Length: 323
Image 1 (cartoon, one colour):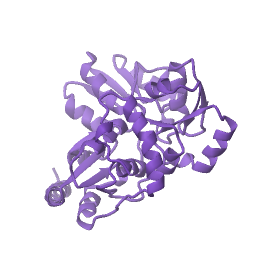
Image 2: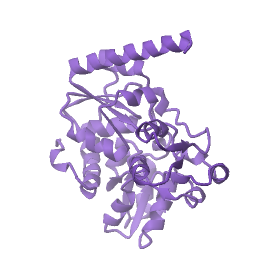
Image 3: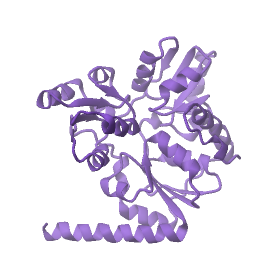
Image 4: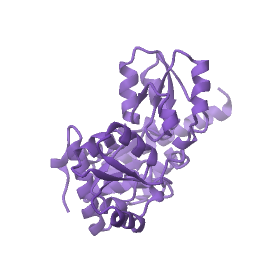
């Protein structure tokens, strides 16, 4: 290890110790999404996909929630925990997919399809959730859509996840929104075929936000949380991972006897990588940035989030604080 690497390692270790000290002082919990930087995943009290983190936000007894993710995730945590302080270390950590839908356009779409229910992917703002009938995550989208009585579903905002749901719920009419994840859409069919040629024994696991032609090549389609479970239980020794590159860290750490490959180097979410240990420490020390949601919006959004949690197994709805 050269001197620069040694200094960087010592700096990161010092930051980790500082974060642990501040966390204890403030009775804080650090919640981390699977796409975060490796060193940020190291300090997580709780890590997972959107559904797991939604559940975790409800169950925590901490006074402060430090959310290492993007803005809409911190908003959801704030809605579920109105009496707690929710901090987003980097306020600029937005989500381009969430920005592809707004309330004005959604209300226009509702007028076009008055008999349709709105199923809202959690990758959306609190204001949009407030105008929706029920939320979903990539891990429970099929289950949520099946639970809705309406035959017509306006699915917002990810069209690729919507197409995946349509293929698995053929008795419903899924009205797609023209939104997409800028990271997952970078994965092309040829990328996967090239990697399969290099690693013919590898199983390809894809996130449902990928394009249909990519999903058609998958051995298994699931959320990031589902990927961890699938890999653990699979007898395969090699896997091609079709989602954001942050997934590799925990997959490799938890499965040292297995090999993992990214089909392309372009599967990086810039927003997820904005959070650093330095910003986490600053968030705890300076109490920045506190995420709040207007009470009227929060009250309505909570209804759609609660409905989602009621559909999912092990629902913690009884623990949700009301407004």
